[in-house]
Amino acid sequence: MNERSWRPAPDDWPTALPSPESRDLPRAALAWLYETMPTDRWLHAVLRDQPWTLAVMGTWRIDREMEIHRASRRYVADTWPDVLGPQITAQLLAAHDDEAERLTVLGRQLRAVETVLFQGGNRPW
Image 1 (cartoon, rainbow, N blue to C red):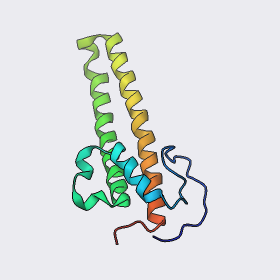
Image 2 (image 1 turned 60 degrees about the vertical axis):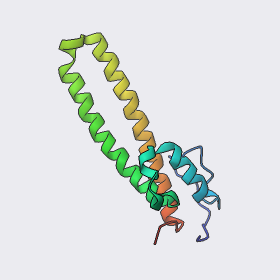
Image 3 (image 1 turned 90 degrees about the vertical axis):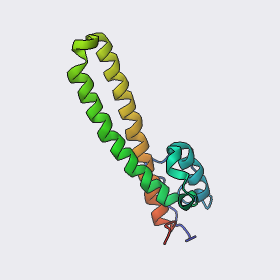
Image 4 (image 1 turned 60 degrees about the horizontal axis):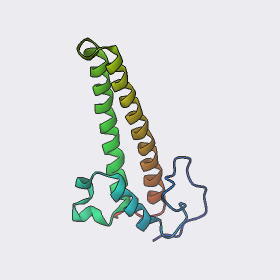
């Protein structure tokens, strides 16, 4: 592993991970990614020991989930008030907004981890 120079943790750094300059980061990142990513992403043997690759795939997946989430929110806002009424629809939209916030934070964290791992030489090549 390449030696890391000191640098402050990115603003979106996950609190569950050690600082970016920690020698334990690749191992800790894998554990965090295993918890964060859906299981189907890391079941493939080729990914199990590749924290940077898992982080890249996680970032990509979160971006796609956000696209789907936006479309789902639009559908609920446009279609469901007539079916469920405004009060239930407002509750569903609030739940959508909460999930959007969670996905946004997770996406920022994945990008921060991806960047630090890339800079630290934890790429598969």
